[in-house]
Image 1 (cartoon, rainbow, N blue to C red):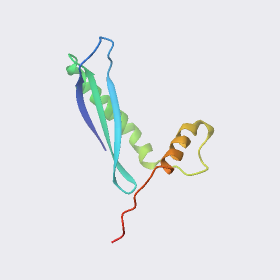
Image 2: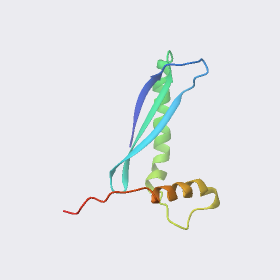
Image 3: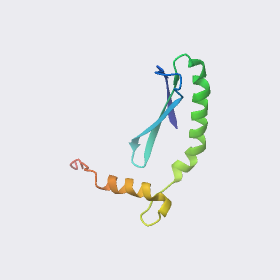
Image 4: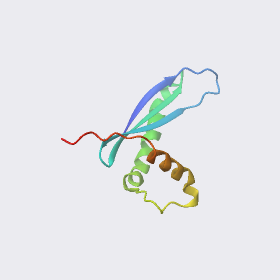
Length: 101
């Protein structure tokens, strides 16, 4: 399940559009909690429930795929090149293993 946070964006111009962001954080091995942030320009706060509903629907539709997707070496296709690059970056990232005990 994802949590949706609502904000109002002070518009610098009248060309400002809705803003959406997503983040996740691990909660236990193999699981993470998702967080959406949605915003609308100042003066359009009445639209927040509509935008929130759209993001919640998107999350509900994507949830089954995201919960079952598994990446394995050798199974990525040419169109996954950006994902493969990200995986190489993550593999090289420093990690810390706490001492056992």
